[in-house]
Structure formats: C-alpha cells, structure tokens
Image 1 (cartoon, rainbow, N blue to C red):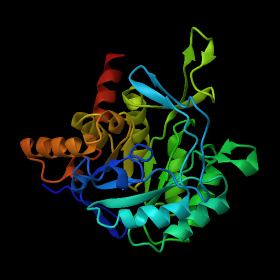
Image 2 (cartoon, helix red, strand yellow; image 1 turned 90 degrees about the vertical axis):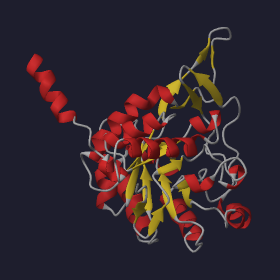
Image 3 (spheres, helix red, strand yellow; image 1 turned 30 degrees about the vertical axis):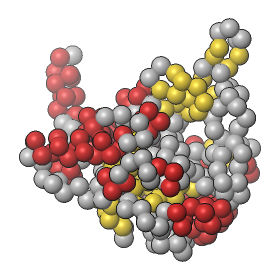
Length: 313
C-alpha cells in the first residue's frame, strides 16, 4: 500500500504528521516513539527572538478538549539552529519548521535563517499571530495580509511552504485561495478556535488571558467542515487538523479532502498516538483493498447526501 506523500521537492514517509506545539521541537520525543512511522514533525512555533509567552495559568482542560494560551513561547530561531538542528540530524522523518511572527519582516527573517539547513525540509507558517504594526489584529483574519506573507516567503525559499489557517473567520476558503494564488504548496486547516472557561468559585476566567485556543476532539466537526470547504475551493493539498485521536478520525479527514493529517492534542494523552494512527490507517486500507491513500482523498459522497436530504424537504 502506497502511503507516500510529496510536496514540491520533498517526499514524506506517509501522511500522518505531528502538529506544531504538541511535539516540542522533535528531539524530545525520539526515545518515546518510532519516528519512521510519521510523515513529519511540525516544530513548535519559532520566532526571531526567544519568547516567554503568557503568564500562567495558560492551559486548562475543557469538555473533550483543552484551552491554551501559551503565547508562542519558544527558544528563538538562533537557539533552534544551534541546539535543535544538530539533534534532529538522524531523525527518519521530515522536519517542518513552524514560524510565528509579529511582522512580515520577522516572518521573512526567520525563514531566511532556516532555509539553508538541509535538516529543515519545509515551512509551516502560523498566520494566527498578532500583527503588532496593526494594533494586534491577527494576520490570519485579513486575506490581504495572508497574501502578502505568502508572496514574500515564496520569494525566499524553494522548499515546501504551508500556510496554517485560522478557523476564526467567516469563509476560510477565501484565505486558502489567496495562499494558493501567491504560491503556497499546501494549507493546514485548522488552527485552534477561540474559547473561554470560567471558574465558578472565583468567578474568574481559568486562563490569565481570558480567552485561548480550543483544541481536541471537541473541535473535530468544525475542522472537518472547514477542510471540506477548502478542499472544494483550491487545488493544492490540505493538511487536516483538529481533534484527531484515532485512525478512524484520520480516515474521516481523508474522505472530506485532506491529503495529509496532523495529530495534535492527542499527543499529550499518548506521545505515540500519531504512529498508532498511521498503523491503523494502513490496516484499514489493506482490509479494504485500497492500494493508495490518495484514493480516499475527497471521496466522501457529500453531494449525493445533500440531494437525498433535499428530496425529503
């Protein structure tokens, strides 16, 4: 069964990846799981300078998920180059550097510093960051800014360029289309949803920042709908993200149009979950005589379901 997946000049072992922010920088988990079972690792977000992130409390559990407001805490790109890239040298799967920034110039600077290193196989761009030059508004909620970031980064690398989109917009397909038009090789769908939790005893928010990003199984139905919307709007591959905890979840994402998937919050429950999901997908394909996972991608017969529903009305 063919599990291979390619973007631009990179071939990945398979279509199951570890999502950014849930797998460290990749070196921390080498002794915990079989990394050759993964297509790749999306690193924790990297900025130009180290960031301490938000003050605690910045993580809290919710029904079927979790809220986080880490604030993009990271060691900075220079320390990543000095310490992490050498440690990742022998990893048997791809390493995709996730970049977060507060200006277009910072996005470009971080990518330019990382691009010469062979161990960095590509880039995933987190556009859900606050734009400090525009009063803190997220880049990802402005299609013109998403277009500009994609255009400027495309000029600076021949490696795979993946734009990670926020679901906190009216039509996510609009943002996918501008990313495609400016040269993105793929889009990641979705980043976290905005959420909030309150302590009824103290009558205060459970997060220091009041709101945070909701992830985990609770967001899977939203993520599936967003992936389906994007798949029908662009020709570039879609990385499906959001609440994937089992191989069955991954199959659902393939059916609605994801070419690859990323396992996120489930990594906190079981660091080996992505490898187990990869194995489960392979077994499902074998049992169902599916020779290539690409046969599953976008094969959900949703149009027929809509026709049946309309006939009942």
